[in-house]
Image 1 (tube, rainbow, N blue to C red):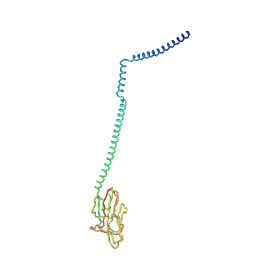
Image 2 (image 1 turned 60 degrees about the vertical axis):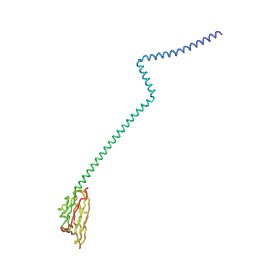
Image 3 (image 1 turned 45 degrees about the vertical axis):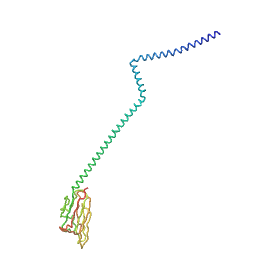
Length: 256
């Protein structure tokens, strides 16, 4: 009995001792950690440590006072970026407008130059005046090519030659020509308006016992240096110096 009690108390004492040692061990470990932390702080200079602490405190206080500071910083960055985009857009738009203005000025300059050229042409047209009218005061019988109308009544521009009986176009353009004749008492009579040897229009009569006065008009587009004259292919025509019934004339209507 006594032996059992002594063993029991001995075991209890042994376990109690182990528990006490286990409790003391963590405490010693904590003491060692604190000593190491103290040693760490001891390694850092006192001024640097205090500055670091103050900086952390300042950051903590700033965040405590203004919890939206970070959001505001991001918002300000976005505003700066948006301003840069708007500024770039402005300059790009300005460049496009300047380029379009340059193109418009170039086009207007070309149009002005074209208008000046047309104006010069119109002035030249106004300065180029061509009118002539001539007659033959005698009898023309049979084939005569060309009829030389020797009596010149009008020759502005000097395009008609009484020596050759031909009109030479001084410029390209639209011309009107007229010619007249008194025919009859000789069978058929044919009088042609010729352009460079090509027949254009005829004045025909077939009156063996009577006479008739005829008048023909034709408008032609001709080139410079084209020649125009009258050819009597057959028949009989006549006029006097005062009647002017055997005539040939023309004018420039428009230059082209």
